[in-house]
Structure formats: C-alpha cells, structure tokens
Image 1 (cartoon, rainbow, N blue to C red):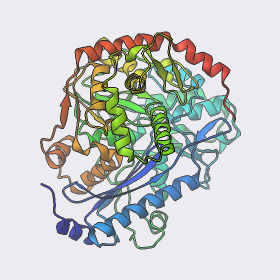
Image 2 (tube, one colour):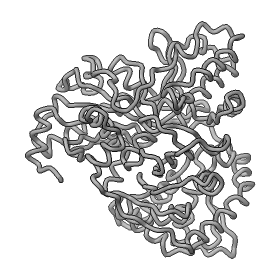
Image 3 (cartoon, rainbow, N blue to C red):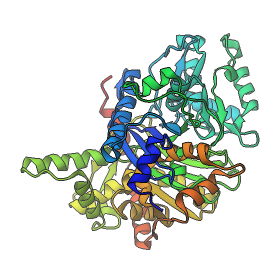
Length: 538
C-alpha cells in the first residue's frame, strides 16, 4: 500500500529513509525510498565517457562531481516535495557499471586512468585465462584487464596494492572498507558457488602463471573482500559524508550495504533473483540475466557466469551496445523538429518514434543497421562503427527505419540468448524488462519478445532502474528478518505479488526477427569494412 506524503515526510525527518545511487553509463541516479520501499525522491546527473588515448574512461573528477550533483538534486527534490532537509538515513547503497579496472598503489593513488567495461583491449588476456581456468573470462572483467597489463609489461603493475570496480572504489572512499557484493565481485574474478568467495584454486593458478614476473603481491592480497546481500559493509565516515554531501548536512555513521553492479541491481529491481527467473536490462548497453538451476554443459564465450547478490549462479549475456545509436537518431529528429520551431517533449518524441516502429514490416523491409559505438565481443568486433545501409529495393520509410534500429539494439543479445534457450534448454518462468528501451509502453517488450520468443513483462517500477535496485538491497540489509532470503524479501515486502504487464511473443514478430538476424549476420563484412576504413582519432 502506498504511503501518504505526511508518513513519508516523517520517515525522512526521522532518518528512516534509504538511499540508492547508481553510476550508469550516461547518468548517475540517486533514489530515496521510504519504509514501504517506494521511491520518494530522486535526482540525477548526466555524464559521458571519454575516449582518451585509446581508452574509454571517466576521470576521478567526473566521478565525484557527478556523485555530489546527483545527491544534491535528490536532496533538493525531497525538500521540494516534503519540506524536509535530509540529515540522516537508515542505509545507503552504491552501484555502478560492472567490470573494468581501477588500480591503486599503497598510498591510495590511481595508477592508470579508469578502464571501463566498454574497452575491448584485453583479448589476449581473456583467451589465455579462459583456457587456464576452463571458465569463460570476458574481456570486460577486471582480472582480464590486470592480466593484459601484465602481458603488456605495463610499469604500474608492480605498484598495485588494490584493484576494484567503480562501485567498489566509491564505497571504499566513503567507508574505508575494501569490499564488494558477490554479484559485482563475480565480474572481477570467478566465484566458487559453494564457498561464495573468489575461487581459491583459480587464484592459485593465476599466481603460478605470473610467478616469474617477480611482482611483490599475490592476487588474493589485492582483491576486495566478498560480501553477500544483507551483510554489514561498513558505515559512512565523516570524510565520506563530506564527499557525498559537501553542504555538511548529512551525518556520518549511516550503514552501507555491499556495493553491487548494475546486473545485481537490475535483478533486485525486477524481482529476478530466484532460479528460473530472468531479466533484460536495456540502456546504453544491454544484458540478459538468467538465474540457472545448474551449471551449463560447457564454456561459451558468449555467456558469462556471474551471481545474484545472494550468490546463486547466473548466465549473463552482455552486449556493449544497445540504445546509443538509437538515441543519436532520435536526437537528430528532435533537431529537425526544432528547425521548424517545434520543441517536442522528450518522452513524447521517443514514444511517437518507438510506436511508429510497430507499424513497420516484421523484417524491417530489408533495412540493415549496426549500433556498434564500440566493439562487440559476442559478434567478434574489437571496434565498432554505427552503420545504416539499404539496397535500392529496401522499403525505406520511418516505420521500418525505427524498427530496424530497435531490432539491431537487441541483435547481439539474441545470439547469446539462443544458446541458453535453444542449445542448453534453460527453463524460464518469466523474463522482466527494465531500462530506457522499455519506457514507451509495450514497444520494447514486443520487440524483445519477438527476439527471444519468450513472454516479456515490465513492471510499473521498471523506469526506476538500478538506483532503485541498490536502494532495495540497502533496505534488505536494514529491514530483513533472521533467515529471510533476498528472494522472499523482494517477493513479499517489495513486489507483493506484482508481476507487471506481460506481452506474449507474436509468431510473425519471431519470424521477422529471425529473417533480420540472418541479414544482420550476413552483413558483418560491411561493418568490418567500416571499422577498417574509418579510423578513430585518439
């Protein structure tokens, strides 16, 4: 039952509200929730990665100014709605884009610019570690970045005293604790599902592999500690409080939940942490998470094995590119409208164009597009070039144009999902969609249902995304009862039977998407030629 404004106001005044902040690819979002786990206030800060000397990165200044601005905007929203200034909270959680590489020396100084998940520069390391461990190590994973730096002979490696992810870095600076939630940790280094810790045997294999390099550290000494959902992950220090809220109003001592990745928060935000459930997060990148009942039969380079925030095994299909190119086209249509003196509302603009796509032909009328802003490992591209191409016989109109860009946003994802659903025969009771692609009612759902031939549900809360998800994980830490699992907490105390709006796959959409996918695969040489012929400036 929704809480009224006065009750929520009293909770904020009494310090009973919980805050979640997530660092997405293009936005840092803060969501404040009340004791009914409902969003009460929010704020955000837009940011964008930089391509600097061949590396996709964000600076430390980007991180801290963005964090402070999103918190300030959330606090302002709370004051506007409830007339209350936030001074204390029941709990806080931080989340961020998974994977990547942030390495620090013993003085706590960043040794090289933050290498984000978007970089596809670790192929050699990825392949060698996958062969060594007999376990798929994607290029995005932190251990692949570390080992690639070893293979490259990078000077900084000998000085590494600690390495972590973006969420782990922020949490460390605010609490002094070098920890990660298990879901986020599973994107740094393989997890032993039995012990719920980094895999000791693989750590020993890695140490043996690099023993002749003479580094003064062992891998286990420079990794963060692994925590499960609900466990104590430290409290906000005085210094951390000032970093988060430079106004000085926020008090220290607030407990923090284990920092998680955007995959784990997506699972929480869609109530998809139990076996036979799954979710698809579609924004700047797109990934599908399927909670498995058993191990896959073999290693697949297209499928990552990670965990839920509670440590259950998850098959993950992660694609670097989703809506960036789609957003660029929508922005161009906005510019076109403004040239005529029309200033459409953003949501209305997206909604109109997305709904237009549903009028298009099931196979997009012969059009072809690639949304590759960056490399795409599932389809074996180290770099990407956004591309649109057609033949003189293609039916080129707005509906087909929008439809092909929605299709290609999910093209690489379908490749990986087909392996789990068609080759491994993984059973799914439900798939839930969340993220920007699903904001326009039923459009993204219908396209995804056609891509994976599976019913897709979207909840009313889907637009809140990962910031709400990490707030829920912080709420679980604060409010769960002894022995209460995260799955039970979410099902009974957050979602209370809500299953969302379901869209069934249309057989014609399924057939049309299959036709498009064949064209998509056959056109890879076109994309490769674009990569070869159009060089990026450093």
